[in-house]
Image (cartoon, rainbow, N blue to C red; front, top):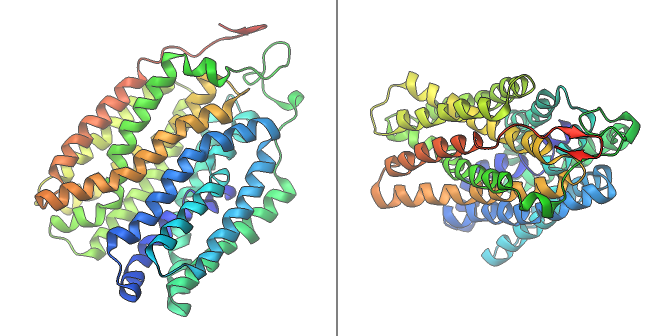
Length: 393
């Protein structure tokens, strides 16, 4: 959880919103250009996820995660010296994406899934709470650093988290289990860690069902989160009220992860995920138009947060359940790609609809369909494979 909190998954996306205004004021760049930095970062990191996942399978999560935490911290701190030319600015974000993905759940999820089986859903949910903790802590640190030393000071101030908090703790106490420490659901009767290879997984219809489901939900959710303040403003409420709605999104993410993770351990996970993903479809309906009451907007914000919490749990949990742990990192990395790419592109789609129509209604209608179809696809995955002595049935 601490590694996720201080890693590359939440830090850039929680700090840049506070820096967009100061960077625009100092350099005169457009908001689109400034935002493009984190979009490039997200896409590059997502494309690197299969390589880092494969490395975690081969040499262990500890080496991959710790080296990536260190590289991410040093690189993020060095953003104090960001170039004042747009090409250099984008290039720095791309370079950070090349080394940072190992500090995200792409690595940590493998370790959690190796330690836990019966309570794996809840364990993953607790780990992923790190993104919610970052949403609460990071803006506070960044705001004070910007007040003290300008927007550039925010980067080294936050680099302290991976370098001086998560890295020392992980060096002291983090490890993966030995084979004899793995729970029965991770190993077969002979004691070997079971699981499909990436080639076998890609040949399975379940792999492509998950790819499509994850991509649909990422396209639906990512832009709604980034543009939430503007959506609330179209209903006639000031930024202070919009910030309160964003707070409920964070609460929805936190509670959604815990509730869904708890239920995953007790019920068939796709059957839990489908109704959970219908809730944000209802939220999109509430967000349409310009006259929704504040109460319903707050409910919509919470329900959208539940979607984010559900999707993050779905990727890691179902990867372990359907494909096993022998090559978890590589397979999870491939499934993480549509999540990262879709989440990075979605804000552009929402923005394009707003620019063309002055409202978000067309994209919100599309998001309703994407949430519904993405959730329904999970129902086609079938029962979990049964581990036999010499393989999987």
